[in-house]
Length: 218
Image (cartoon, rainbow, N blue to C red; front, side):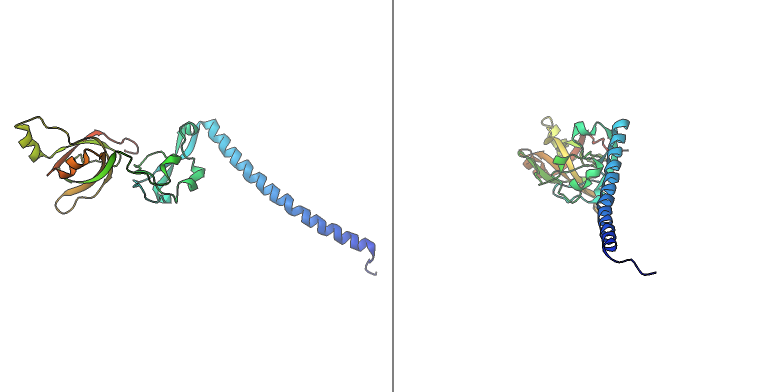
């Protein structure tokens, strides 16, 4: 039987091509709807449960340090939108950016904690202090608030003539190193700029914890 030719065949071919072209937009639209539906479902489930996954600091981050995947973790909290916390789905807003301040383990991240490093704040200074074993709390950590006093040997001499006075009050620990072969540990502290010279010039120091950083501690 001879193959059909003529206008009918041409019309059929055009219709087939048009049908193929129409299916592609529909397929793309269907995928978009599925993805959008999944996001909406996820957000709705957070709202129903009252707890949303947000980003927190997994390990200490220094000011000016680029945040990596290993530096953050996901935790679930309530009222995340009210606190301005960074949702876990917005991880790209944090990872790859510079920490604007020292961040202690367990800190819940907000957008202002990353960006251009603006540290130390005006009127304050970051100083390194050598601490001998027994002159600071064993579990001293980043974020702890401390008072800095003269070391035991200096305090013994001073107490004979006057009442000892703290060299710096309400200082914030920004890093704690490992002890060297002599048992000395170097820590960095955020202190009032006027108190910084007194601390750095003291022959020895003693640190007393005022308010430990409770976030993230066991």
